[in-house]
Image (cartoon, rainbow, N blue to C red; front, side, top):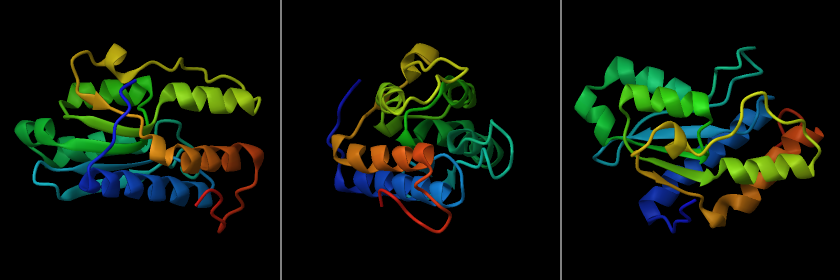
Length: 173
């Protein structure tokens, strides 16, 4: 875990990822969101979790950004891009990120934090073990978590898992 104090620009991208997570929650999906940013600082693509609305457990926003990047960016552009994401990548998304050759990842909350939050709520363990991104993609530059966003993100996850997040509402926002 590499706690960071993001720059103002990085914080804007992270806050957008958290906004996308809140949007996912309002739609009935788990609260995760991600933003792909080019080397020049421009947002290239963004997405939110759609696992429940599309009934497909692979519809994580990080994986969607990989799909977009491989279709629209050169190898060099992918390597120079940064993914800003509300939560640390799961092993599936980390592997896809590595295979696509995407660059740095900056995440707001870690997989370990999420595991702890869900355990506190009595949520059953995931069928896939949480691993730090660098255990899946050694050598990748990874930064996070960002303490300033932890309470808001915890609130979104608590809202999802306790049913306090009816569509149209925005707990934790």
